[in-house]
Image 1 (tube, one colour):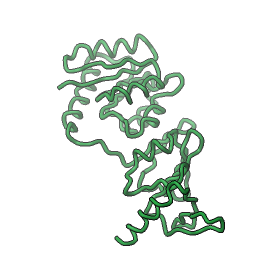
Image 2 (cartoon, rainbow, N blue to C red; image 1 turned 135 degrees about the vertical axis):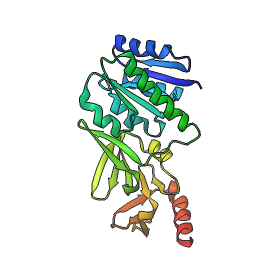
Image 3 (cartoon, helix red, strand yellow; image 1 turned 90 degrees about the horizontal axis):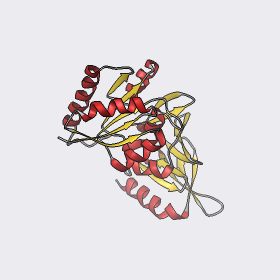
Image 4 (cartoon, rainbow, N blue to C red; image 1 turned 30 degrees about the vertical axis):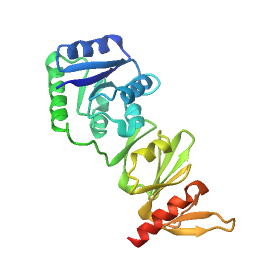
Length: 241
């Protein structure tokens, strides 16, 4: 088995240590070394590695920022590598396979690598799925279940998730979220709006001649002309079904 790996760490010595240990394993192919979060985002999306060794504290954006912005592009195996133990719980909550605390010895690294291999072998033919979105705000990490999202609106370079009485700002574009979400469950009704179809109670014609989607909690959201025919067709099919 060949495992494609990316190593992300802003400290040259630490990055070199990880790459040296990986280089001893004939099954590992190091496809990129990254010095920061922004570079890591580009590398992971381009190279699509199986395994990522990811530092937490980095300039520009940290390891948790990287995972939040990757969305559905998350690799199957993520190992956090950091000098701080305070991030351990959060790392496992966002799906990390292991947490290497610097300085670590060769034996501890081998354990992490074997865990990664086991996961990759087990999940080789299983498509990756997620039922939550990672939201990082003011140093805190929140996990918003996709099943709880009622609608989504664009907010500059972010997207605001509406889940019941709560809202969450995620550092993702609405176009990116649309690609990730199940089209049988969510529908784009405007360049800045996505709705959960089961929350829609109907369409309402406004005085201006435009249509609004009405959600079951009374929220009214404008349907743009670009998406009107598609929305009407989907809602009609759902009503028939």
